[in-house]
Image (cartoon, rainbow, N blue to C red; front, side, top):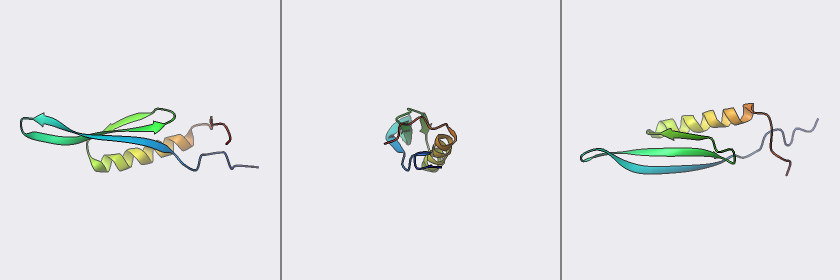
Length: 71
């Protein structure tokens, strides 16, 4: 059985980070990670959360049925 296209060997994410004022004189970094091309979006406030989100999104992508066309 040919499984070469069962799961892509790569995943494309966009990560956006910005500094946001939360109180006068206090800021924190916030971020958004998006899995492409599907568009799943998650938000984070801590860097450790970013790594966990990426791992979760990758695991979810593996669990979904393959809907991509063979290259």
